[in-house]
Length: 441
Image 1 (spheres, helix red, strand yellow):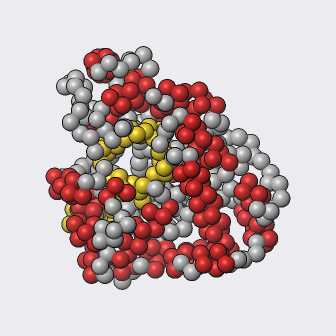
Image 2: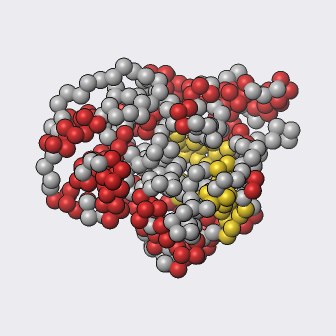
Image 3: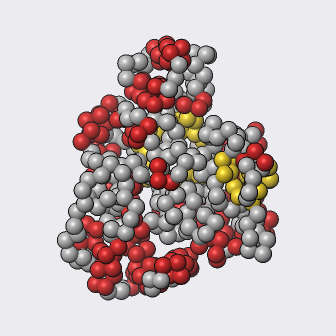
C-alpha cells in the first residue's frame, strides 16, 4: 500500500515564541497527521548549526532553538515565559536564552543526565560551544540533555499515533564545526587549512555550480579506520529517527570538490566510500537498507544508480525536475521503489513553478493531468493526485503545496543569502486542517 507523508521542518511549526520547536504544536501536528491517515512526518535536519541545517556543526548535538519553553515550564524549570507577537518568519535570535539560563539554574542532575553526558560527541560539542561563547561547558550539556529528552518524547508520541519520523542526515558539516575540530584527520586539509570545498557542477539550481562552503572527506583515512567515524553517526541517527534520509547520495559514490577560491565549474569528481562503507554498515544485523531513503536527485551517474539498487535503497523522484510533458505519459509508471515529491525544500512551490511556465507549457501540463485523470483546476492538487497514481512507494508533499502557496513561502533557494532562507513558518494550523482532508484518501 502506498504511504504518504508531509514535509514540515521544526522551525516552520506555529509558535508563540518566535520559532517552531519541540513544544505542543509538534504534538498537535502529529495528531493532524494521524487523524488524516498520513504515515510520515519528514522534518529535515534538526542538528545544531549556524542557521544552515544542511551544514551542521555537530551530527550529535541538536538545534538549541528547538527547546520548548512550555515543556521547561511543565518540568518546573521556569516560570511563565512571555509570548511573542506571531510572525510568519522564524526568529533566530537570543529571545529564549534567558529562559534557558533560568532552567539551568533550577536543574538538578540525575542518573539519566550522568549517563547522557558520557557520550564523547556531546562533550565535544559542549567544549566547542564553551570556547565559542564563553558560557560554561555544563550549560551546553544541560541544553543537549533537555533537547534529547524533548525529542525522544515527540518521537515516542508520533509512533504511538502510527506516525513515523523521517530525518535528514546532511552529508558534510560546516568548516567551523565540532566535526572538523575533533576529527580533522577525516577531512581533506593541509596543516589544518582547507583547500577544497564540496558542491556540485552546474545544475538545475545554478549555472556555475553550487558551492556549499563545507569540507570534503579524506576518504582514504576513513576507510583505513574501517568507516567507524561514519558508522557511529549512522547508528546515532537511527536512534533519533524511524527512517533516515541520506543527503546527497551521489557523494557516496563519487564526490565533487572545488578549489576554495574558484567557481563550481572548476571542480572535479573523486571516488568516494561506495560499497566498502555500506557493506561494513550492514554487518550489523539491526541495520537494514529499508531504514534509509537516499537523496538521488540531480546529476547522478549509472554507478550511483547501481550502488543504490544493489542495496535496494528507496530513491527519490521530484516531479518538477523530471516530468516530461512532451511525452504525455505516466513518467513513473514502471518505478516502484521511490519516494515521489511534487517539490522539496529547495524547489519552487508547485504554484510558483506553474506560474512561471509559458502558456504553452501550462496547456501541456493541464493536458497531461487530464490524460492521467487528474484535476487541472487547482494545479497543486492535480499534481499531488498524479503522484498518487504513480507506482511509487511513498508520496511526500510539502505543507506549502498542500496549502497552494507561492514562493513567498519557499523554504530554501540554494546559493541565496541565509536571511532569505530557512525562515518560513505557519502562523497556525487552521488552513492546514481545512486543506489536508483532500490528502486523506
